[in-house]
Length: 322
Image (cartoon, rainbow, N blue to C red; front, side, top):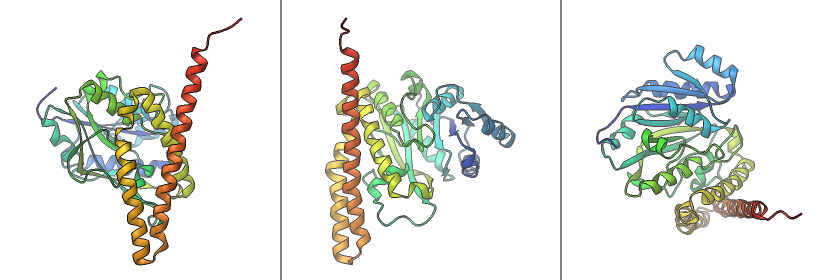
């Protein structure tokens, strides 16, 4: 792997015309980087009408189809396949990159030990942040959450809305698994977590870095600021974590989650309770309650996912009888 800061290809994946305004803002934010991308690749996920509209609108952008299974994993793989730079960065279609985003991502690739670099993701709420929504659970809306490093540091995995990898590392590990990850609005995920863990398992001496100064803003529509979405996303996260653990092993699959559960969440509960007592504000107590509920729902999803996998293994291994 090279030892100098490389050019970067940026991949943006889109699936719906309903997010056209957000998509345009995402593309424009990459076009105006202080460190220009070698190319911007827009992957359209099985939507012919959006594909034609994007090809008409974005003249200086390489617009391609998702050639693999429908969903974010297949779309990212399709974008990676046509990228020509040694580093590929991924930006969500509803995210806006800061002007120096690529500068901060790319600077770390002069170290050959770095496999990938991700940055901070700040929620851009359509309205005010709900008072009950704890920062410890900002991953629910695809953003950086309390408990993540606040300075440049190695991490187990990057977050999909703002991440980059050496292209050769993605290709060598087979890319994102198309049987995992988000399809349309279905709130599953963890495909990037699974890829990051596989990458580190292959090259344990190398690192993935979190660089907070490489910042993007991630739009959070009203539909994702509701308790119903919070509940569904937590449950889906549990199911996804069970799938990741099956793929990469229990120890690696839950390494970061143990620290998060045993340290970050108890601190959040204590913080919210103390603020509620001190300020006599019920909203802070509601955040503590949301942490407890979110953990319980996520755990329930994980247990169900593990049980479903065990039943499937039993069904497959059970001998046929005549």
